[in-house]
Length: 249
Image 1 (spheres, rainbow, N blue to C red):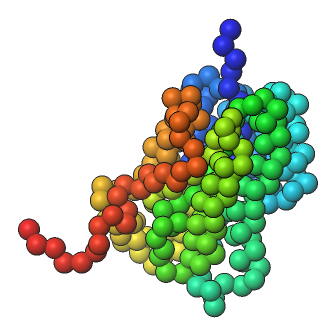
Image 2 (image 1 turned 135 degrees about the vertical axis):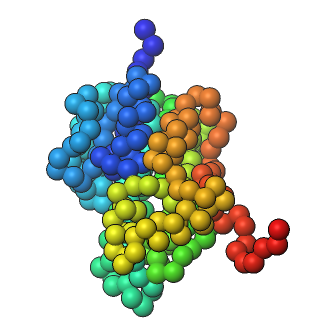
């Protein structure tokens, strides 16, 4: 009998993470989720651990629990993330630390505690969810774009240090229709106009659905992608490809 792959997903209760969970389940994988939410909206077969992934003690305990349950982790999907708005002078030290801890330090911590098990089994994949904002930036996202850019360095470092048996890849989505995006849009006096602006920034004139990003993540966790490592892969609908300005027909 073919062994079921074990996938560990952080921030798996909603958005891209939840789409990954559903796709992994549909492909017959065992799925574990680390999420700060006390209540899970996921199917009962998901092994759900309430965990603040920015807290080292909680991460260490949760990963031990996952290993005790399944015996291994074949793929780690570092998806947990938050958004806080502000320029450098508008961002408090506490806000800066919060974004860095959740968006960057959490990936270091989960990798730190999963990698020894992957080394022991001489195989494993780590997927770090970065952003197109690792390459471009919008106004008022100083902490967010800094963290998402730093993820690319962490990804390369893991890929180099743990080759050849362990792969590490960053994915860099454009705008994705997630609860985090919808909550941010609702802060605007005209949410519909902001959504239209988000859509028009992409060459495809729409934003991504979480399931589209999940398809790439799960593919990268598959042996069909076994020659990909250390890369940042953009799945951004063409965001940032075209220089904005007047155009002639």
